[in-house]
Image (cartoon, rainbow, N blue to C red; front, side, top):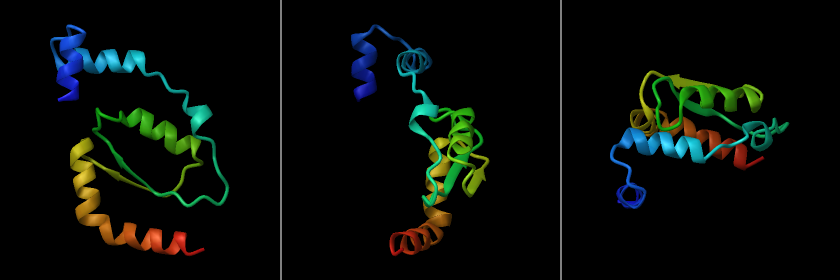
Length: 102
């Protein structure tokens, strides 16, 4: 709904044009935002075919965070979120229990 409103307001006709406009307008300096934090517990669940959060950006973030443990899935964004929840939910629960109780 928000996307439709913005597309109409900016006279954008396709989702691809909208995505391109967002990428042009929203530049983020990952080196500023994602510096390695010693001792911080991180595990990344990443998607090889993600267009919402491009895989190249995920890889850069992973590198900038010091290459923490990760799970790489051969899905797109939504499928990876669903797969992460359905398959890895117990692992994620245990990860938080262990790391939040330190």
